[in-house]
Amino acid sequence: MKRIEVRLALPVVAPLLDVIKDLADNLRRELAAPLGLVDLEPEFRETWIQELLSGQTTEVGVLLALFDDDFFREGVVAFDEDNAEVIVRACAAVRLTLRERCLKPLGDEVLESGDVDLTRLAEPLRRAFMCYLFLATIQELIIQHLDESILDS
Figure 1 (tube, rainbow, N blue to C red):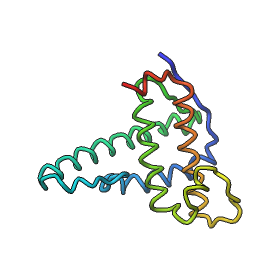
Figure 2 (figure 1 turned 90 degrees about the vertical axis):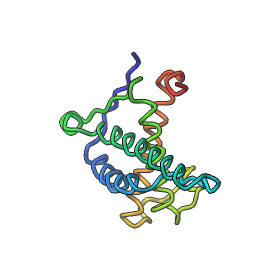
Figure 3 (figure 1 turned 60 degrees about the vertical axis):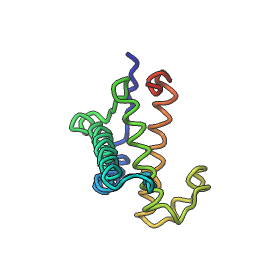
């Protein structure tokens, strides 16, 4: 089984985890990518949304579980075949939520390029932006270093 272990700087990552935890509360109640589904019967639509919310909540929980007591002792997180796909989806959900709730003032071009003067951003916006980049890096690591077939399952 392929496995990636990444050592992270605790003082840098800890504040970003606070951002993720704050958004996780919202992600229990709202989909990161809301669905139109206007053509569906209300009961079916509500059931579908609840199932998607449940899955999203579970996935974000798996992401947060990477940063457990072992992480705070050793500073290492691990990605493997068992958690790769779930972690990629959880990162996407959090990044979409960050984009919509916190990072709108920066615009999509800045978010995609990462070209921003961090010293000019207010602390909450800087922290949200750093979290956005951190999660993008996790996604890239998983996609680049684990077998693509893991993500195709």
